[in-house]
Length: 162
Figure 1 (cartoon, rainbow, N blue to C red):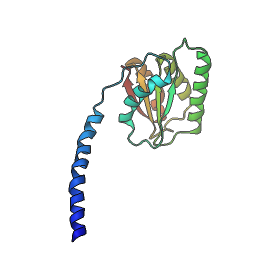
Figure 2: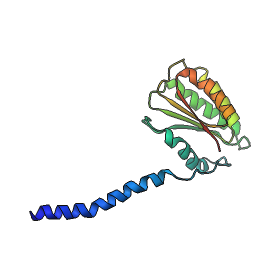
Figure 3: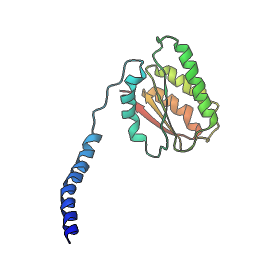
Figure 4: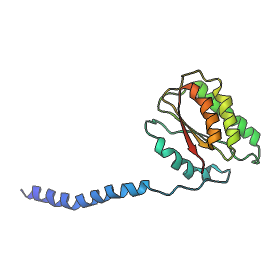
């Protein structure tokens, strides 16, 4: 009986703390949106991208593939664009399975869209069912991305860059 009394006392002490943690969780979700970065540094974009893609992570089974181009005035921009395009084409060529997320964002969204259009033109129709593609940019560019990726059968998600 002494053991039972001790367990009840411990339960009474622990229960209020677990209740407090449950009340704090909704506050953490109501975080303020980070501003749209203006730099070409990926590290400056990380909090912004995490904020934008976190709500869409349901059903994702691995870390998202993030494709990011710096500003066009960055040293060796053409080389970086070409390497990013080759990486995207190689990733798409290997095939994407259900539960994968591709994220596209850039301070050069026009060039990013061009890269998406070039890479997705060779993807077989309906071959990417269950794959999420998130594009962060303007509504007009978002429509171009949608037209390029939807034939592959992806779940397309547009997030406005703001």
